[in-house]
Image (tube, rainbow, N blue to C red; front, side, top):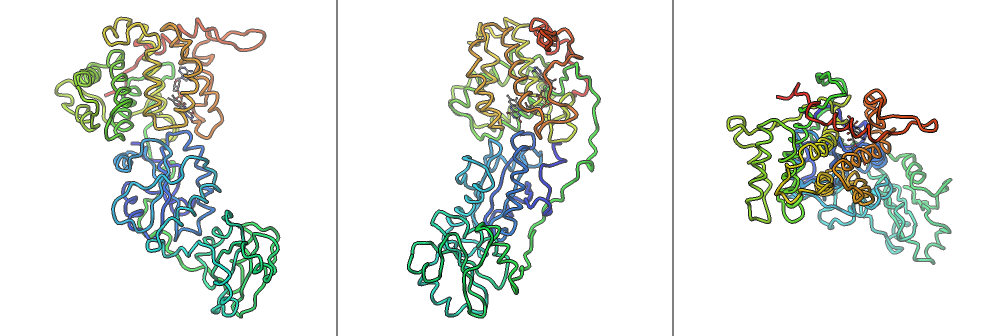
Length: 530
Ligand code: FAD
């Protein structure tokens, strides 16, 4: 399955809590800490690019763990499919906050998500989220993050209670004080508070002339401003942590079992030898399986634009998919059922029933697991589904030319953009990688309308795919065993390349011929397809 290497490792190395189907509910339900969980997909390029940032964030707030925890759950791992469905995850990455002490099952809150995912911004939303707890359900490890006033502070100056009390003076919109409070929650013999710079007379009395600054009351009752090189969170926190007598408390890091991370090589997946000049039915069918049973199945019901998109997609694919009988039959059955149905809202389970139904006996069957061949990655999180999706749509653009009559009476006859249209709708509506969808939509908006023939549609998709290849070259999602290249390469199609004024250039006539051959029925191998 999709199990194996993950973007995140458990056990503290990343400081990210790697959750899975078995642990997510126990972890986030009725927890003494709040949680911030990133539901990601290991095949989503943006999730891969983002992983270093998420790890950096988790490291940065590692000491906050008894109040709020940074976690991940991989929705592309087969064992997590159902869980991600339960949590209503349609797009990756999706960020959800879970409050402490939630008794009932909750899918979490999309709390201030999606503006900017820089560690500092996320860290501040974590603080806001903690402050959004009611008095009663705030994590016990989290002290009050609200500012104290001069009347709170006066008595402390008289009696510190035998420990350090640090007071961060800052402006109302500064997060430094709250960050330092949380940085110190695992330390004993010290209490940190924040105060605003509003009571000018009080500030003057204490000698506070700039903000943020830290006023320290010592266990013996003396007090004064501390001297710090730079008025930054990390400077304040490390100073306070290193005070004599301040010690870290024991904190049980992992109160529930988290599956140990397998290292990259521990899982022996059999490498299937393949010929990159061929197209493998196993890839196309695995992609269809994933699309129908996993990607779409994350939607509990289809209605409105979603239903229309799905109907159009199935209509075209049922007519153009150059597949084996049982698969084509399944698509046709689905299509007839969708067309005959007068409903404007369909529970996705009804579709799943149909897809899973009957099986081989009635001659209707689609493989129910993924087996990548030409789309194998050198690691399990690379290539796979998105590779198969490209191949599927390229194949359909070629079939639209080869079978001009297939779409008669569907409403799509004589539409040169038919395949591009259903692809654009599908990607825009359902494709889990939202940034991918956005980029694709931008390109479609810009130039899809220039497509006037079915041949031009083949070439348009080829060009767009090369633009994407170009953008992704050198990115962390690139599988170095299958580097991003301008495709087809010289070795696959020498005729496609020619030199113009000393520069490698495309001969588009040759490219079209090559694409029709490469994505044509005669080039499909059934090896590994079952
Ligand atoms: P893929 O690019 O998936 O290509 C699959 C196969 O198609 C190749 O192995 C090759 O045989 C063939 N091929 C390659 N180029 C062409 C071409 N120009 N014309 C015809 N056939 C070709 N990932 C991101 O990280 N960011 C994104 O913004 C992004 N946008 C995407 C948008 C769409 C619509 C899709 C379907 C995927 C997107 N992806 C994105 C995923 C990314 O494009 C790749 O699918 C993924 O990185 C796996 O790459 P791959 O090496 O398997 O080759």
